[in-house]
Length: 319
Image 1 (cartoon, rainbow, N blue to C red):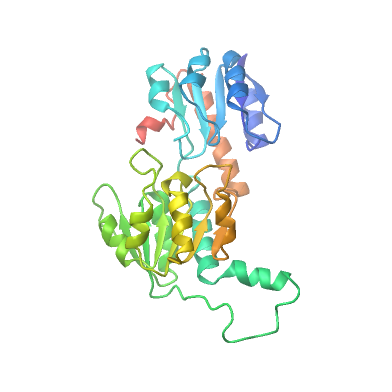
Image 2: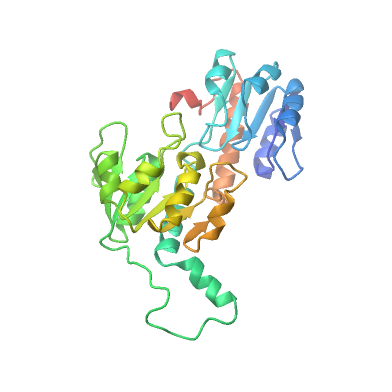
């Protein structure tokens, strides 16, 4: 039998059953936490395949230890956690789970935009403290309307376009950046500088690469409108969080919405100081339907790899 190491407990039972029926002997991490680098290095040594999560760092040391591994099937659309080029040079497949996260991530993006714009966190706390609610008041917790505002989308792939579709329903004007030219009725393609300067809301949907790491820092924040909203549901390290904290302390934003963090699972402690920072625990894809679909794609990739086929979601096909 083929030994499959699964590092996450997110894989749905239907996919586990399929994999067992396909002849995989499953060893699953059930600790409720990420494996340490040392634990992961030890466990991959006798594995024939690995189903890993975006929290696992699959670096050269792990890949070198995985002498029997034929495929790393990543449970997530992003794959910046894997040195896929090195794995490829070793003849190891690396796959991800594209497309199926689009709607769930776009939905939570809009949720964060609305939560920040309407100051949800402050209003909800006001209700829960049991003391502050005094009935309808005209000047308390004033938010801002989305209709007529400009949404700048950084990265206009599947998720960025899905966000644009939703935002147009709120009457927002859409600007976007993309590496290649695109003509679409969803919005207007502009330069990064123009997007920063003209957007009332900036939402990040670009992959994390060496060129996008710290794409947002002090310089970019200073170019944004002084009362803008910043949203990140992509990857945490696209934002320099030290610079973000400094900008927040300088009062540069109307508010910020985050579902991802630069040093996950650690969150920069200073972010908790700000009432107008809405934070979610990286749950952009956390719906039953999406987890089922992600699990199914992982199983498809693993089964194909051991059936002598090219897995359908090789990451270098999307690079």
